[in-house]
Length: 222
Image (tube, rainbow, N blue to C red; front, side, top):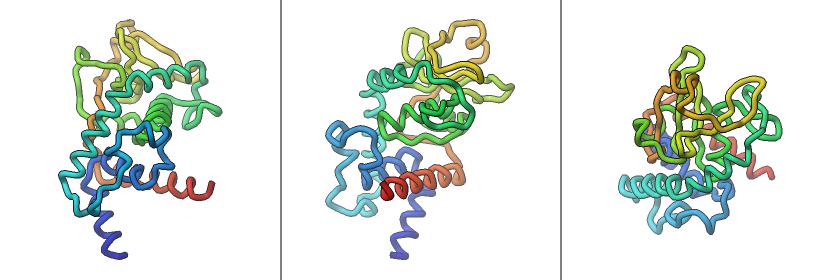
């Protein structure tokens, strides 16, 4: 048991964010928002050999399939985001019933639709996936803005046609805006595509892992 914990903690420290969350959801499909039948098989089937024995090649396969699921389900992802339009902005809230701030809106959509757990802060989200240029944007990509004289202080989801959906600020609600508008164009700070990789530090990855554990404990108490 001690060996298992040591080995698992070592993987948590070294593996990309997407791999950690994917492996947790593989082992605990009850945490995933979509029915198991809708998820890619590689994400829900436990390999015949131990996942620790599978090694790097297994991690790579999981990462690739997770990235495919984000790309392949971009239309469903956007549709889910659209459903939340009109939900009021509320700082540090995590559910539509109580309100959503900028980063919690993005986190909610990805977790609810794909079972993909993103870090809580927009600055941390800006280190998930690979950076892409504005010309490369596709529906489902994350777009970032400098709205508080801080880089990556706001985040939204690109929906196509130069538009993005987000929860802007206090006194507003989730809505669609144009990247080309004077305000957002001036504050555009970059974009990321979720591809199963990350540039998070050890403490940030551990913070995400703690959140996964919280979800596991919550699901067991239901």
